[in-house]
Amino acid sequence: MRIFLPRSLAAWQTPEFRSTLKDELERLDRDLLPLQQGLSRSSHALPDSLEAVILGVEDLPGRIGAKVALFYSGIIAGCSCADDPTPVDEITEHCEIRLDIRKDNAETTLTLLD
Image (cartoon, rainbow, N blue to C red; front, top):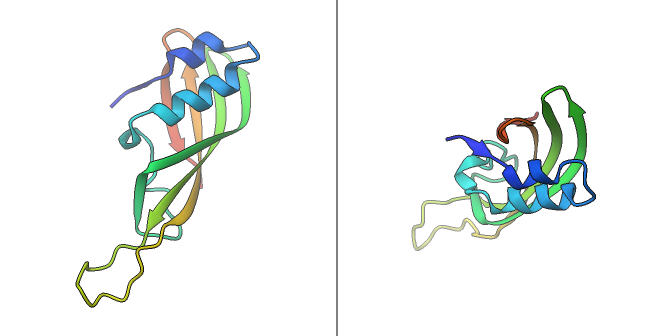
């Protein structure tokens, strides 16, 4: 699926850019974000809670670059048996992504960072 961030592109070079980008990312379909791939402490990403933190932005030829931290929850999924001792507590997860937003059409490439 393709990602477009038109509101962020429209807000580029305004004081509202960071808050607009944050809002637009948090409203994206969670399936478009690498939440499952970014897990480090749990085994299943929960899409309900997501907070984006803009770490940095840069003006590049033909595109806007942004580094973003995503904070969300995950669980360690057990077998769901009645006697399964695995707790179902949510664990805070974090991953960082790189966004490249094209200035001509707002099409956005998203890369999971190590």
